[in-house]
Amino acid sequence: MAMIKAKNPAEQEFHQAVQEVAESLIPFIEENPKYKHARILERIAEPERVIIFCVPWLDDLGGVQINRGFRIEMSSSIGPYKGGLRFHPTVNLGILKFLAFEQVFKNSLTTLPMGGGKGGSDFDPKGKSDNEVMRFCQSFMTELCRHIGPDTDVPAGDIGVGGREIGFLFGQYKRIRNEFTGVLTGKGIGWGGSLIRPEATGYGAVYFAEEMLQTKGDSLKGKTCIVSGSGNVAQFTTEKINQLGGKVVTLSDSTGFIHDPDGIDDEKLAYVIDLKNNRRGRIKEYADKYRCQYHDGERPWSIRGDAAFPSATENEINEEDARKLIGNGCKVISEGANMPSTPEAIEVYLKHKILYGPGKAANAGGVAVSGLEMTQNSMRLPWTRQEVDSRLHTIMKSIHETCVKFGTEKDGFVNYVIGANIGGFVKVADAMLAQGLV
Ligand code: NDP
Image (cartoon, rainbow, N blue to C red):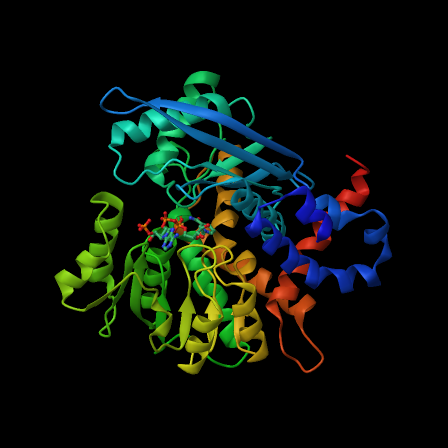
């Protein structure tokens, strides 16, 4: 860690992600000296390539705006670099390196041949017109297109990058390269996208929670669920929980959260989807419409619930929040977001031995269906909704089995953190050993 901190100064989130993985892996590596001698862990923590570029664009008033673009190509040991693009004002090198690092393990867990990467920009799509977002995306892709390709590096969406942005990015790639390929995932259904891709991360996080609960002979049916966020992951987490007979009572955005004790049923969810995806409004409007409580500037972890699905952003649950959740009877946490729990919060979960599915396992459904989108693009044949959903379900079960295999402790407790970290590591590490020092 001293080396990581010295080489990557001021990248706190990256240090946090590497530390968590190192703590799980070092005892395993000690038992398997081949990985130690080849310094595999140190090599995985060093990006294969980092690209930083200027993104100039014109706003609607003709003013010149300048943002910074990034692509972190972390590991290509088991497949082309694969991971989303995030457009948010907080984006910086350290955050993208943490996300790219996590992505390597996550992609390996999916069973599909995908390496790890991540990218994005400090551009804030909030408050921008569609034309401004288009001009930004075109400028961003004008530079990025020379570094990516369907067999090289395949970006997707993340915070701030949904169907609209993927469309503009894909259009510009196609125009410059004169090729219609699966260079991005999360595409529209009519032009190379996969059914179930928008739903995949949320559905997957719920399938993972069901798998964890099944180990205790339990299920989500009748459970009260706390969900944070109100974007892509939160929306489809809510939809799947409703389908399985659970009740979602909270949603949030960066300004606060709503608490609807009656539950956010499908009709209310349709309102949220329109509010967030089309009207691009604030979650507070839900409380005004459905006459429930809105908590300004707060997160939902003080609300009583049996299950929690953090689906907004990193470090959104601290130690105190974790204690509140468990004190209120929460038995299962399935992370739709990436690294939403601080290390102190994770310690609380593990101490209380609750069912805790870390993001790199629980939210791998999104990239898994991205992998299936790549497969369909290569075959030039689309699969049905049922086919993709059934493959997603099978993949989430397999990730759960891998976690159980590598994470079961002597007393039978499944430590999903250790299980996911070792399970994700082995395939990448063995590929690195086989391929030599490349
Ligand atoms: P969206 O942009 O669709 O939604 C993000 C949601 O989180 C919004 O409600 C947003 O509020 C809220 N949010 C963002 N930043 C903050 C913040 N700093 N504090 C509080 N709330 C915040 O993104 P996604 O739903 O796609 O992503 C959510 C999480 O899931 C991220 O951690 C992402 O990395 C992870 N993830 C996403 C995958 C995917 O397939 N989309 C795959 C795997 C993981 P507001 O509207 O105010 O911005």
